[in-house]
Image 1 (cartoon, rainbow, N blue to C red):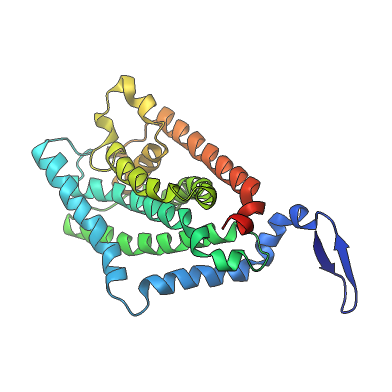
Image 2: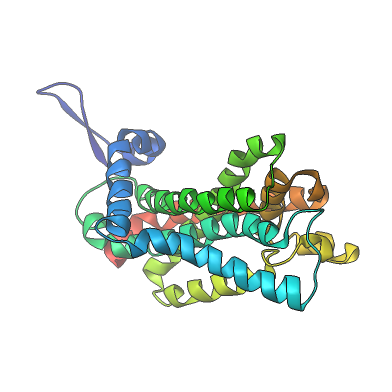
Length: 280
């Protein structure tokens, strides 16, 4: 039940208004979204160097390690004529965006328990606001990519204009899982210990340190059940061009799985949302 104000002296109590107007309330509370997003960014970067440096050092060092292990020691091929380090870093961008956004969103409700227990607003705002911080990290890491392109004298083609589409897909993949996990995390606090394991395991089973073209053809479609496989292939295609073609059946499957997790995350989040204030 929610009160609806019609004028300075008129108030109507309308049953079920909160549920009926939930999605319009997301727009009405857009200022809260901006405040929470800015707060998370400020906490991460204000009066600190390590916050910005970490967004650069972590993907760069991972790129170096994967280039040495998979490119030099294992001798795996790159995509087309692209340098192996550039191929790896093109995959590190979506992976870092996904893993950071997933981690931030998954623990967001627990970190805002006082806000949730005191006032009404669409709780969906909290996990979606945390994704902004991951996107800022992504933009910082993108500077490294530009530096690598200059270092290797590599010029991308027109494909790079489609990079925002695949960036959105990476955000949706993280948000879908993040909404589901953060809802479960309110009721079952043990889920916070599962998230780091999922992220670490996903890093090695996703085509980050190697090209997905090395996967045998008979397993390629099955491998695409990993939703990040299609997103990473899309990033490489945008950045490296035709030397890194998209496996279309697998890409379509990955997109379908991303859409499924977005639906699952939102539906489960909305289903459990009414109990958050009591459980948290």
